[in-house]
Structure formats: structure tokens, C-alpha cells
Image (cartoon, rainbow, N blue to C red):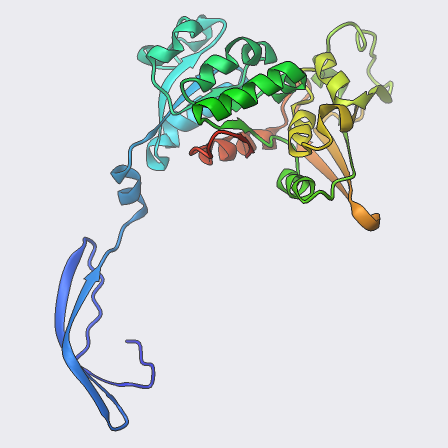
Length: 328
């Protein structure tokens, strides 16, 4: 019973599990003032599962079935129904890898026919080349979450994807991944206060997938070696599968862009259990922030274990944010 200094007579509060109307004759006394009348109360109580089933599910298409793609597919199949997510299709360059792990009716054999499987969100967790070949087509049909944002270091592709998002009213989602504080960087950037951004990623040499032979001569026990230091625009083509965190940061730091954000990758044989991501943000008047994130990872793992859950949480917010780029 709730009492706000009133003397209550014959008042009942009802909370049914389904919408209904309750009528009660009530009398309230406040000093010499008496209020009485017939009160009609309309109450609504919903359980979380009621809300999930009352709205249509989001249909998700997953492009790529590596470790991250497999994690997302398994999560949707296991927990998606309760969260309003259903799997529309799964595509992988090698379809044999999907057999026995993905229901046959959900396997998409030819990616070019993706439009035959209507989706609300298409998630790419494959390779930057897929973003280049299909990104515009994906946005013409659905929202698009770019799991390989290093592809956006291509200025022309970046602009075309942004224009397509605006044209079709779709959202180009960029997941934060292993980036810590991405939303804060974006807010500082949007306020005009971001002056500089530097990111260093350090991993065991077995965790890098680099173009060329920069790291072909590494030996166990050699210690720390700086592989590259320069703009993220130059770094992305060198390590397209390893610097998506930096690419996400460059998206957040829109005024600096890929050319203005500085990045460094370091090979360190002492890092056998985790990856290290350091972010240095510089703002106005001497403001600065330095974060260090240690992301558990086994030898040879391109993606740290905490990043899987980060991607999943990013997917859960992909509900449509208009025709723009959105860091999630």
C-alpha cells in the first residue's frame, strides 16, 4: 500500500499478468477535504519473454564461419529466440565446413544469391575483400555489420559505403571489438576536442597474419620487435586481419580518419597468453587518457577471447540507427 499522507479507505492496487481493467469505489481524506469516486485502473504487466514474442524477430545473415563466425552462429541458434534473433543464412568460402554444424536449410551456397534470404542485418566476419565485393549490395538490402573494418581504410570504398547507407536508409555498423573506450573517443571527436589518437597492438608472432614476409623469420625467445609504426591507413593493408581494432578507432575518430590515427604493431614472444591493446587519446588543454587492455588469447589466435562476447553484444544493438555509420 502506498500512502502519501492520505487516509486511505477501500483502495486496491491490482497488477494482473495480462492487461485488464479494475474498478473500485475509493474515498480519500486529507484534513477537512474528502475525495471519493469510482476509480478505473488499467494495468499492463509484461514479462520479458512476452515482449520478445510479441515483436517480429530480427533475421541475421552471417558471412564467414571462422572462429568468430562459428561463435555468433552458435549463439544465435542457442540463445537467439529468447533475444528476438533468428538465423537467416550462413555462408562460408568452404561450405563443407558448415556440414553438421549448421542446419542444411540455413546454408547459403552462393553469396551472390544472398538477397533471396531476406535479412534485417548481415554480419561479415570473413575478410576485407568480402566488404569490397559485397558491401554495397548488402546495404541495398539490409543493415550491415562490418566485422573487417580494415576494409574502410580504402577511402573510395569508405565513402561509397557511407553514401549507400544514406541512400537506402540502412546502418553501417562497425563493432568495437577489442577497442576499449570507443564511444568516449567518438564523443570527444564529435565535440571537436580530439587532437590525437595512437594505438599499439602487441601479440605473440604466431597471432599475426601479415601480407609479405615481414615476420617470416621470427624465432621463439627473440622478445619484442616493432613491425610497423605509422598511419592506420598504411597499416590496414599490411595486416588486414589483425588491426580491425585500430580501424574501429579510426571510424570513431572521424576528424582524424585513417590517415590521422597512428598505429603500431609489435611482435613479442613473451605474450603467450594474451594480446595487449594500448590506446592513447589526446584532447584539449593537456587532457589525455592512456588505457591498456590485456585480452586473453592462445598461441596462434588472431582474435582474443574477450572479443567474441564484444561482437555478440554489438550484434544485439543492431536494431537500425538510420542511414549512417554507427560504432557499436
